[in-house]
Image (cartoon, one colour):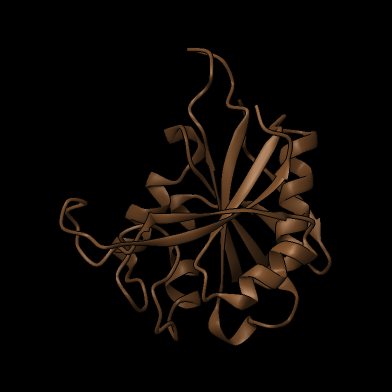
Length: 188
């Protein structure tokens, strides 16, 4: 399944991020003070080495998860991750994926994430053939819940201790917290 993407998004582009985009990620996270972007990433900005490593793990050619960026005037405004489920049939295509997003601190509350989530959701259903997408949102994250509803996602359930906190590198030592699942499209 080809998950490469390059779409016009207003005055910006929503496109697949590559390892060569690491300088964009370093610049975009320069003011970040919260846990940002992908998995075990520590709090705060990326340096060039960690940005290259993160993007290499999330390239579509690596299989599985893919990173997309909202890029405007040579700046990364936001990033979206698409994490497909393993195929139901060995060797077959995935039928669903989790979608996650991040917006650089000074670009938040400008509708960038909403436009990007809507565009990627539409593309994932229509072009990539994914029947179901979902967001995993912390219960206290009211802004992300509002975004999910505005993007056409529906609240489905609360999963106790489902999401990893990424405080420890070792999953066995890490804390888990509840997640709200918001879905789009049909299951299975």
